[in-house]
Amino acid sequence: NSPSNQLYSLGVTGMNIHIRGNNLDINDSLETYTRKKLARIDRYLPNIAEVWVELSKEHIKRGGDQAVAQITIRHQRGAILRAEERVGGDVTVAINQALDKLYRRIERFKGKRDRKGAERFSATLDELSSAETIPADEYVELEAEPEFQPDIIRRKQVTVTAMNEDEAIEQMELLGHTFFIFYNQSANCMNVVYKRGAGGYGVLNPVLE
Image (cartoon, rainbow, N blue to C red; front, side):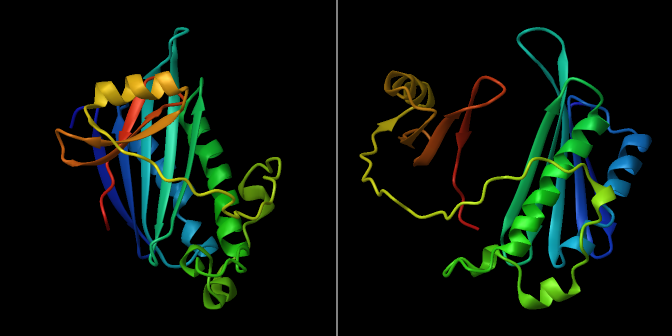
């Protein structure tokens, strides 16, 4: 495989771990390191179906490269937990920092049990009883994320226009927004174009699972 796009699938304690490299060579040492870091994650959150790890190298505008690590967990009930980190150093640093964030997401998933109608996005009592507590030495303690109640405070009807991706980007910029919903006339479906934090734009193409 080319260093620009490598994929490894690893089975660890019943969950599937997929590692993909974009513009980055996933050698044996990096594969082993990543596998070791993730080997215990299903002890802290039972019933994980799959883990996807995307490791990449990106060139930044101000010069130089940065390592990017994105870790995504898909739970058996459909919930998705994701964390991403960008660093100017080694990709293993990005992996560690992304995992730190992911542990925070796991603790939130395990702690949220009062959101009626969103039960599949919180842990069950059986999962909580079988899950191990994440040891303090497993990750660097980060500043706590503020707790909030995700109350919907506004609903807005959006008029959608058929256009191509370039037109959608221009319209988004004219509105001063960071995302824009449009009907993609070439793909015959609804899309969302958005500004990426690392620069450039992205397009979301919704697919019903």
